[in-house]
Image (cartoon, rainbow, N blue to C red):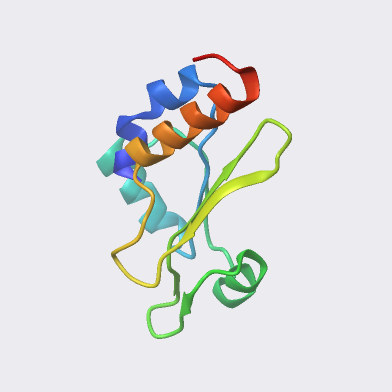
Length: 112
């Protein structure tokens, strides 16, 4: 989440909105917000198994976590890119998201 916070101004400038979902309790989320200076919405205390099922993400029962799932939506809320991780590798970085969002904008507007 810190990576996305570090690039939030660039994402905002493109009209992108960032949201995070977590199974973490409120106190842990408050610690994360304080540590990273997170300003985008974080939905917390999510039901891990149900949320993972809806998103199609991987749920790890032992730690009650949903492995990262990244979704990039176009202005019509159509999914144009998604990535599921089953561990610490395979996550979309903020830089990757920025690149893809710029590509989607370019394709939609025809701007070179």
